[in-house]
Image 1 (spheres, rainbow, N blue to C red):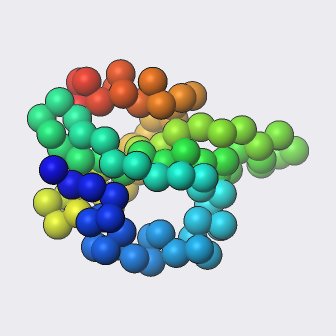
Image 2: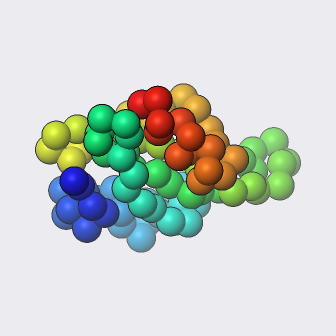
Length: 91
């Protein structure tokens, strides 16, 4: 099973200080779906402060392919890690 260090090694630019700061990411982890497919899970403030809104922490998910490359973001936004884990049960 994939782990965060392997993904960071496969995608070093994604985890750069500049990228983390630009997207207002807080933390990353790798979780696996029901068929052991790996997903990058990010806790982030990204884009929540638009239009004068107060920044809010939320979770976003990117699938990982067999080469541990980060695929496009899924559309869903999650309020907490429990919501992510629930979603992963079906994916």
